[in-house]
Amino acid sequence: MSEKLGKIEHDLFKQFISQNCGFSRQEVSTGPDFGVDVSVVDLPGNWGMAMTSDPLSLIPSLGLQESAWLSVQLMANDMATTGFAPTYGQFVLNLPASFSKADFKIYWEHIHQYCANIGIAITGGHTGFIEGQNSTIAGGGTFTTIAPKELILVSKMAKPGDAILVTKQCAMSSAAILAMSFPETVSNKAGKEVQQKAAEAFFQTSSLEDAIHAVGSHNSKEVTAMHDVTEGGVLGAIYEMAIASGNGAIVYNEKLPKNEIQSKVCKVFDLDPRFCIGAGSMIITCKPEASQAVINRLAKEQIACAEVGRMTSADEGIKLQEADKTVDLPYFEEDPYWAAFFNAFKQGLK
Image: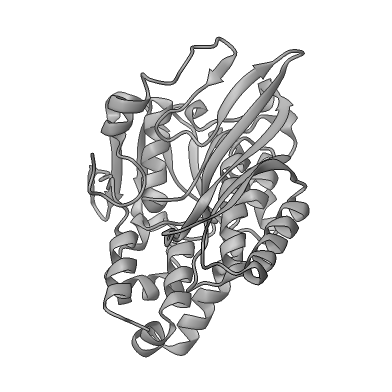
């Protein structure tokens, strides 16, 4: 079907999935869609149930604790886009047959602790050891939360005129994983300090606090939508949010939060940090008059946030303003990070 790495392309999603989603139920108010992080099922009494699923990571070059962190936080980041934290979790573990029981104990203890820290009850799943399983993906998980349905946000709720905000900086998770996986290469080409600081940012790749503090009092309804930054980076996430909400967008390149550390790591691997996996950053749209209030709320929690553009009408297109010219914002269906990582791995870089 596809030779591309990463998530399924938009066209394949439309062809094979979007029209083939089992039995149609009216209570599914938000189903699977491009650029949408969660599904929502309406429950009695004006409640809604939000759900999100993601692969589980098991990456030897990172470590067991780090893999557990990614497994929990990447799902939590998706749920955070609703404005609420996840409360229940299901895990399916398909582990390598060679994975020792001692290592599994360490991995699972960290899964447990990270879930407990967020307030997630692990409610079930499946665990098995499989011959021939050598992937860095060790299964999948689903997080769920229940909240008043009128307060649950989804990325398709952004409106024309909304300000577009970005938390933290571009390519934080890409740079962190590359720096941790290829420390000698990054140290030799970008400097030991860059390698260390990029790696240290790994445990900042949660955007749950970003979302919760951005929303603040749910009664204010200043934030209209959120979308976490994964494949395609900050610019890819803004593009997806515009498509999901049926809008256009204008993004100002000079306002994007491009940190020197992440940029230097990306340069080692010939990557543009604007288009690389950026877990830990959150795209937030809000009413334009509320932009500074949202930024201030985040600043009080030491979370950096910048206004980088605004949503426009669909007929204006999705645009990127660079210097004195405005161009169509490109969208890459395959995140360049994947090729860079596996090329470095195949080359035996240390």
